[in-house]
Length: 325
Image (cartoon, rainbow, N blue to C red; front, side):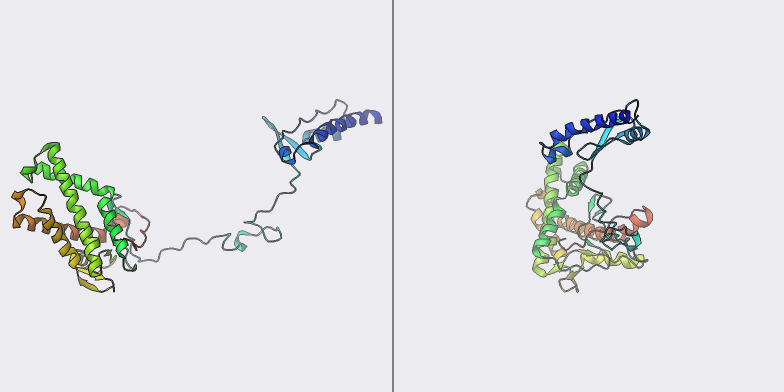
C-alpha cells in the first residue's frame, strides 16, 4: 500500500522540479507576470489528503498558488510578496486596526459646518445662469480694495463675457425692429450696424466706469449686498449705489466714477451715431437709460439670492470674494 501512496507524490515532486529549473534562469520581475502552470488532477488512487489538496489548489515551487474560480481560468497570486500590508488610513503605528472614532482628523475629516441660521444667501457668480454677477460682494464680506490690474480685469470680463454678445444682440435687434436710427437701415445689414455700435457703447462705458475713473478717484465700483432687512430699505440702498459708492477706505462717497463715466461714454458715442440723433435730448435720454439700467441691475443683484433660495429653491455655491472683481 505504501508504494502506491508514494507514486503520485513522486510524480508531483518531479513535475514541480521542471518549472523550478526554468525559474532559476529568469528575472524575478518576469516571474510576477508569468502564468501559473495548471495543477495536476488528482490520481485515481490518491489519498483523501491529496484529493483535498487538489481541491484547495496546487502550489508551484516558486510559491505561487493557483485558485480555480467558477467559470473562470485559474487566478494566480504571488506569495513571495509576503503577507498583506496594513491599510495606513485605518491602522495604527503597529499595524493594529483603529476604530473610525479613534482615527486622527486627517484620516477622519470632520463634517461640513452648518451655516448659522439667519445668514443671508451668498451672491452667485451668475444670475439665471447667464447674467454675469462678477461685481457683487456677498453680504458681510469685506474684500480689500481692488488694484488697478484687478479693476481692468473686471471691466474686461464684464465687456467680453459671452452674455455680453447675447445682450447686445437682443438690444440691436430691438433697435433695428423699431427703426431707432433710420440712417442705419434695416434687415441684416442694419442689424450689423446697430450691433457694433451697441457693443462699443457697452465696452466703452464699462472701462470708464469700472477701471479708468475708479482707479483715478480711488473708488470701489463693486456692489456690496446688504442681504437682510426690509424690502424698501434694501431697494433704496441698491438703487442709490449709482450715486453713492465706497472709496478705498470703506467710506461712502459721491459716485463720480458712475455718473461721469457714463457721460463720457455718451459723449464719445456721438462720433459714430447718425447726425440726426446727435441732439441734446437724444444724448440725455441715452444717458438716463444707462444710469437707470445700472440702478435696476443693482436691485436685481440685491434680491436675486433671496429669489433663488426661497422662490426657486436653488442653493448655489457662494462666489469667492471678488478681490479681483
